[in-house]
Structure formats: structure tokens, C-alpha cells
Image 1 (cartoon, rainbow, N blue to C red):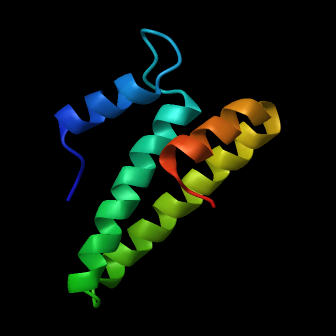
Image 2: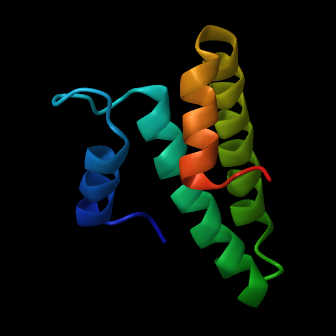
Length: 89
């Protein structure tokens, strides 16, 4: 159910700010969004997986906190991340 190492590396290269960037809010939000999408698909088949649903809610909360931080510190980067990932319309 977790993200593969290759996919995570690919996402880091796509969303990083500098060459050695692996932990910026943009990268973390992208990785969390991918995991959230995977879990959402999982729950379409396994609707009684309540422990997994709790994990999903924790991931959504963490992503929301990172987005809130990014919005407060740099509105331009926030808008870019939202547009790239396609979170809001």
C-alpha cells in the first residue's frame, strides 16, 4: 500500500526546489497527496478497513497543516503547489 521508492524519487525530482531538496513542504505535500489517492482507491474496495481510514485521516490532516504553513510563509509557492497537484479548483 505504500509508495514505491522509484515513484517517491520521481516525485522528489519533480517538486524539489533545489538539487538536494528532499524535505521541502512542496515535496512532502506531493508525496502525501499520492498516498492519499492510493488509500482512497483502497477504501473503494475495503470499506470496513477502519484502522486504515484513521491513517488516511491523519495523512489528510498532515497535508492540510503543511498547506496552511506554506500559505502563511509564501503565497506564491502555495499557489504553485495547488496548481501542480490539482488539489483545489
